[in-house]
Length: 410
Ligand SMILES: C[S@@+](CC[C@H](N)C(=O)[O-])C[C@H]1O[C@@H](n2cnc3c(N)ncnc32)[C@H](O)[C@@H]1O
Image 1 (cartoon, rainbow, N blue to C red):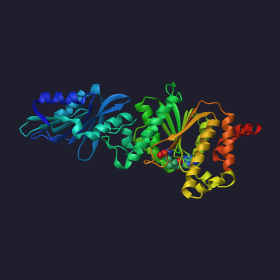
Image 2: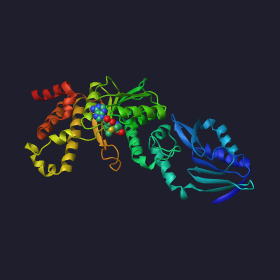
Image 3: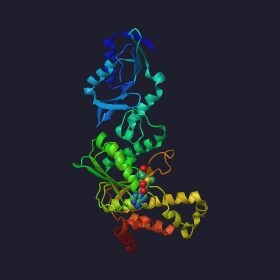
Image 4: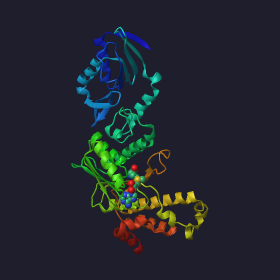
């Protein structure tokens, strides 16, 4: 490490310039100076964050029991930075993309500065930074919502037990962003209306609301629906804690809410609740549906190695293969039914299976012509092969039946 001595003004300039530089990553101030004024704070951390797409600095002030945070735009960072410098901490550590810089004030009041390239020991934060650029809600930066959800610590670190949830949220937001563009839902001139069916504890609901409104500046209103009043109560509390506005929650069955949302979400909605959510999207002519199906019981009980499917006996005799086959068939029927109802539909991997076994996402954008004969024929053939009536058919009701019966005539 290269070391030099600086006078107090030069040290202040170094800190100010580093913290306001675009390559800045983190500053930590700690340790009392001998004969210093005795600050109430034992540590102050500064890190860059984005708020509404604009660069800001987050100041986190720690005493022995609590942490107080304050966000300021880079432009307004001078006064709070001066306040921290006046507190006179003995040790200051600055991280940038290129350097790790240490300022130490000795007992005699001399300021020694050491500098080394970041890559030598800061490999992990550097990778974090690279990763951070790729994800909607990056780690390493404080985020009020993720902190309220208990996913990030006050200074932006992912809590080890919440890593899978954090990954899931970011993957989901990537899909959402991509599909909002695809469905032409940016710049509507009014808030995007989103209905989250089976919202549960609302981690993904709140994350979507936060990302759209506060990071992307896309006005969005979200209603979360769940049949369980306990999770609705908790969701209301979390939304309140996070200071989220434009969010509503309703306790009830999917489909019981009279709504015409632009976007319907159904993330891990149990069994046929996914079909009910798909039906709600179709009925309300939602432009976009994102569904991550959960357990699939309905067809698991219905499929048998009989008739044409008898050839699949070697697969269906094993419980786990029977279950997985039922999962695949159920989601294939759903995707096909959506296509028949006028949605361009694909099925993709949502997150890597290491994060959740329920990792398929059905994505549907309302753009295609409804009732296309070729898809109706495929649907009918698949039903005939398996000798089943999928629940999606019942959920979609009369209009879907009309398309199927048109297939009878041809
Ligand atoms: C596994 S949780 C998923 C929560 C959240 N969407 C997520 O992905 O983290 C499924 C939720 O769907 C709710 N649910 C299941 N069937 C429902 C129905 N028919 N109507 C409303 N909510 C339902 C359950 O109460 C539960 O909270």
